[in-house]
Length: 357
Image (tube, rainbow, N blue to C red; front, side, top):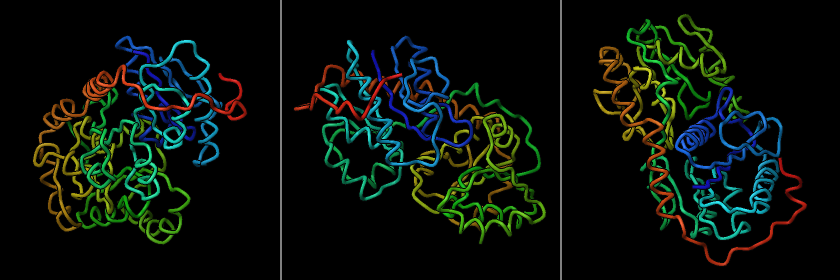
């Protein structure tokens, strides 16, 4: 199949540090190429992939900007329109790409929803009902506006990139954006009450600085708390793999939570608040425990540390491998092959997209 994957301009594929969406796009692209499909990925010039890479920007541009996103998508669609051979599937991971998809002919468009529900985005989805949607958890789909052409595909990763660690070290871990909804302050408090060392990694985004200064700065200097800052893949695997357990005390409807399966693939159990996707991802007493508050999290730490780490790894590989994720994407793509959208627009203003690279 000829498949176009449209990533974002704000993080490279794969990410150098943070970037769950771009990591999944990269995994999907690599697995599709491995299976012999012709894949073009529209990302940033500092991306690394075996697919054909096309880009508007040489480097990833952070923080995200609507105008940057618009230019990136217009550039991608300009390249698509100039190609002599059309794509069988155009798979977007950007709402801007979804909005402009009516300009690129009648090829089937698949759009993955990576975010929690926002009314503004839901309105856009409802106006593009001829697209085909992928949700990343059942909970995410249930909270979104009903869409007639949608299915759920859980994320998957390549297990070989997450070495199994048979014997853990004496600490628990937290990895994630340092925002109130991710629960880093709760993770620190639980570890301190348990008398166990906590190693914490993550970055602070602009909107989270007030929370960080008020609630995290005083906690990060407490005894037994080690703050690692943003981490690359090797540092992430070391942090997650050697932990007794990973704490995931979210305070929002998490659409997926990639760090959970990254930990499980290393053999590390997860203790998580039962919100968002957590009930779908954590298998009780096998890969971790689902709890409802800090007291329950504290009570489950020892039990989690006693779980069979080899079993955690086997279960995670079975449920959350990139192979399974790609199988499900291909099955969906094949149902759409030959399906054409009604009344597409044929021209995208050339001033938007410029010269392709």
